[in-house]
Length: 88
Image (cartoon, rainbow, N blue to C red):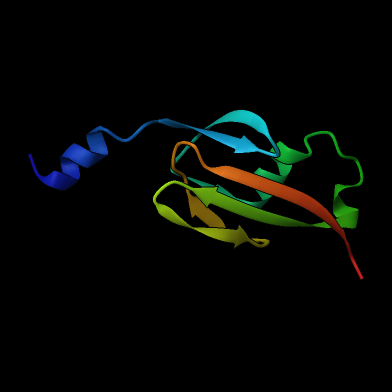
């Protein structure tokens, strides 16, 4: 069995992340800007009136930001901070 096959076999099917200080469990290997915003503000009827700043930190990876249409590979323990920004 190759190293890649071993790593693939041991990949988790879901990841434990924190979005705006709330614990979440998400499936898949990556998460999009839109998915993070939906987790942060699940019942926000004014969602299309705002832009959001999405910042993330994770163990053993550089900090980063997500913009509309972008995604990031998930790692257990990642933390996302999502804030509303008025469109100007």
